[in-house]
Picture 1 (cartoon, rainbow, N blue to C red):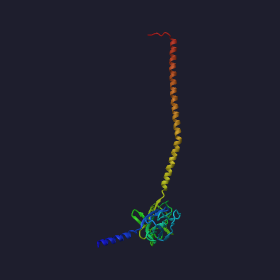
Picture 2: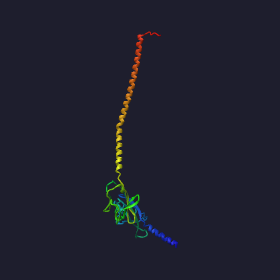
Picture 3: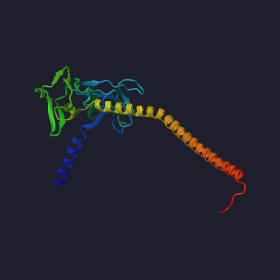
Picture 4: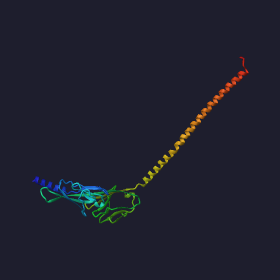
Length: 273
């Protein structure tokens, strides 16, 4: 009896765990590949479905369509947008070697799209995140996640507007900076947007520092020749002074010798006391 219950539990767990959504993440405007990871080699066809309907998938190799099949049954999505967020079902049709009847397998993915935005203070910002499957928008704060919008309730802040699927911040301030996430009705994360303030003050400081550096370099270009010329003039002055001193010294010695000769001529036989 225990073994039978254990077997039933194992079958139940296996059947449900196989249907668990596979989380995948991609950056807005980037690419994302949904890996099917099916070992069957006889892949005939793949189909992709979102919550809003069927998505056209190019089935040929090397096609330029935004959504295309790659490898055996993987699906590549190019140029991701926020509208790609949410549940996607990949259905793979393959041929069993033992029968000519086509069979299929499914995999369900939970696609999460993230983006990073830099905004100048005082400027409005539009976040096109209020998709049909969006249930609420939250902002991260020191006190945890706080609601800023909820379907059926509306906005939680008078500094925001909603228009045509856009969540609009009227005039951005540093208090608006942070991480915003969009959740579906099952609290699965659809979109994450990290908003930072454009650091214009830092840019101005860097520009000033660069100007100072350039000015210092320009100042150094002309100050070194002045220093060298000054040093040369000092050395010339010292050399002139030493030369003048030696010349005066030689003149003095010649004068002493001349005086001695004159005295000797005037008094050729000096008397000793």
